[in-house]
Length: 176
Ligand SMILES: [Mg+2]
Figure 1 (cartoon, protein in one colour):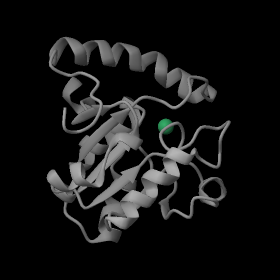
Figure 2 (cartoon, helix red, strand yellow):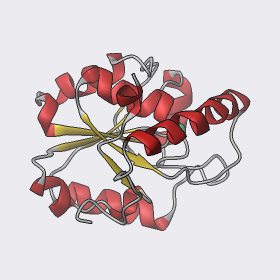
Figure 3 (cartoon, protein in one colour):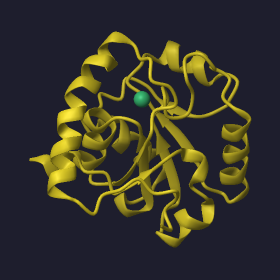
């Protein structure tokens, strides 16, 4: 049961994940959660590091698609300045959004990775969809109320994961 929440990798931040590392693992596209993974509510335009990372992916020909549970209107507004394609109402922790994004790209399960800051939505959805995943640390700690409830339960899930998989640690990047 607890295995359903297990991320493939745990990396401090998305900015550390280089195209080279992704390619070394056969990954051709990145699917990503939006809130607190790519942008924080207090910095909706994204940091210079985010933009630099996006440019690196683009130069390497690695598409980045946002997979968010928010409405199309909300996501469209949020990614307006970032110019990113997205799947809204993705129904995480169900596999729907991830599978939709993956099919849109015409890629296999092995060729995409799902990035997110939550075990109970992003990582569970990735495992349900049968794709590899990267858990990142949330950009900021103040969340909307529904996320706060998730985070409360998430602490217990994380404890169980750490007990069952003691080798699981936060890495600087995929190469560690
Ligand atoms: Mg999030």
